[in-house]
Image: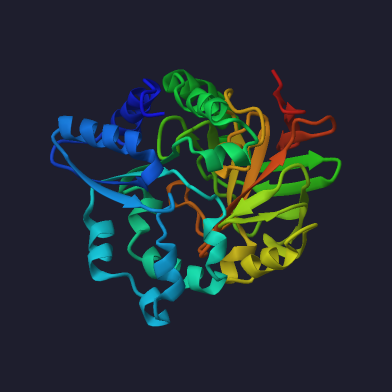
Length: 361
């Protein structure tokens, strides 16, 4: 992949459009060793903008140092290293490139240890969630990601760049028209043969993701009112992947905004563990609408799957401050529901605006 000219366009998108690096900035450039061509090109462009590129390369392709988390004394897991905390609190930008050698690497870490480690960092990473820190997360084509997508590496690379190297100005204009419909509504209802779920929106805005913190973009989202979810939803079309685990056939029933009943066809114990992590894990932190025209199939890759055109996704756990979300949790687990089938629709205040994945006039 090192000779692929699309890497230069990808790097320019990340540096110039997604975070718009300014002179004098200190920018963390983190990623797996397999992403070397992209990490080097990103660093080169940051230098040309008169800013500092601070490279952090991981061996497994994710930001978590798995051997250290497995072996460190628990007291260290609970508190971020002072130099790490200082970096998160003072850097001006972040380009984070996932390039995993094994997409199930985090499954080797006991859940309790992983959660303690993430909790220890969370207090120092608040600027990520408020977007005071300009950041973008993306992926680089690796054999592991291609295998999960059941594609040869070259085809997966075509897919990745096809979903990312879009005219994001035009995409923003298109998605904004739909987002305005949702912002004008008080209630969203998601209906399918196995689903009937209502969410209240209040006066919360929708954020249009078009060349911003996530690449690929291609969604608009908000945090629904925390006590509003009523009804049932079944995620029966795609597996839900989170921290290296895969759960099939998730069924959730909400009452007063809270999950009161949950089950799954596989890995149900893991699902219940996540729901019991803290008080906020059983409430919703996000409602998102997938709109990326370059993503039409499931890839076992949440960064892409949540943007599948004609899908919706809900996130269990932490809310999003930039859209006035108030729920607080250790988790933020995006789970995708395919509404492109017959009998599926999305309603706003009782009016159908999307049917079988197609927007209505």
